[in-house]
Image 1: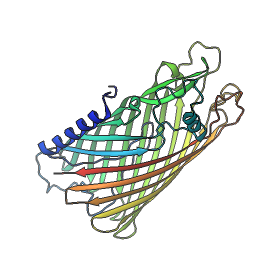
Image 2 (image 1 turned 90 degrees about the horizontal axis):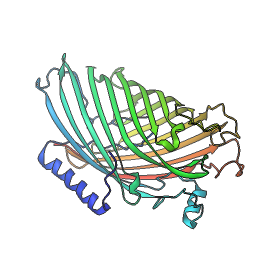
Image 3 (image 1 turned 90 degrees about the vertical axis):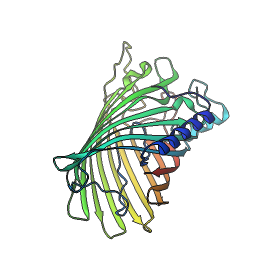
Image 4 (image 1 turned 60 degrees about the vertical axis):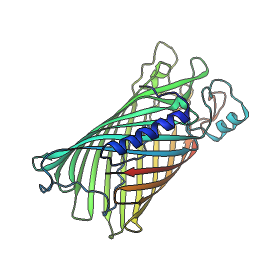
Length: 386
C-alpha cells in the first residue's frame, strides 16, 4: 500500500481522530518505539523495574485468553530525511545540480507523524504466557509526502519460564522512497524505492535477578524498483545483548552485532559492470538506564558501527563502493515520565554522523563526493493503556 496523499492538515486530523477513537472505544496500551527502515537492529528499551509489566509464566494469571488493543502516537523532527551530505545541502539551497537529484524533494528536514496500532492476543500455553499480535504503523511526512510509508508487523512470543522466552517477528514495508540515486546508465538521478521484509528470531534468558542475555537472528530482503535492480539485497545478522542491573536504579546494556548484506540484483543487459553495494557491518552499542524517580526514567546510549564494502569490482567500474569503508556513530537520549498508572509521555533525541571513505574523490569518476552526513532527530510521544 502506498502512502495516503492528502493535505497534511487533513491527514493529521484524521490520524488524531483515529487514535482518540481507539482510546475511547476499546482497551489500549500505547507502545511506540522509533523505527528506521532498512535498519536490521530491533531494540527493547524496557529497563524500568517498577513499570515494565514483566511477562511471567505464573499460572496465577487468568486461564482464559485476553484480546488487547494498543494505540499510540509519536511526532519526530528529522533534520535530514534524505541523508544529504553538506555539499548536497548547499546545492539544494542554491538550486544547483539540476540533474534530477532533488526531484520531489520539498525540504531537507521534515516533521513525521507516526501513529501506531496493535491488536494482540494473550493466553496461557502449557502453563506459560503466549502472546501474539499485529502492528500497523503509518509514517506521514509534513513536506515530503512522497516519503510516506507504512510498516506492518506480526509477532509471536512464547514464555518458557519467568523472563525466559522465544519470539518470532515478521515485518514488512511495502514501499519506501529511499530518495533519488544516480543511474550511471543514463548519467542522471532517478527515483529509488524498495519493499522490505524483515524476519527475526529471538531468545531471551535471565541469569539470576539482575542479569539477562538475548540472542537474535535477523534476515532481511530489500527489493528495489526497476531503475536499481542491482541494489536488491539479502541481509543476515546476529546480535547479542547483555543486560546487568547494577543497582535498584541503574541498569547497563551492551549490544554486539554482525551483519552481512549481499547484493542479489539483476545486472541487466548492460555491458558495463553495475554497482555492487554488498558489505559487512560490525556494531557496538552501550546504554545506561537510570530511574530518577518512580515516575521518571532516562537512558543514554552510544553506538558505533563499521561498514566494509566487499565488492570485487575495481574503483573505475564501481567508484561508489569499491574499497570503501564507512564509520558511523550515534548518541541517543530518551526520557520517560509516568503521568498516571496508565499514561506515559516520552522525549527522545538522536544525533547520527556518518563518515564515508571511498577509494577516490575524483569528480571525473564520481558524480558527487561521498562525504557522509549528519542527522538530528527529536521525538515526542504518548503511551496510554486502559
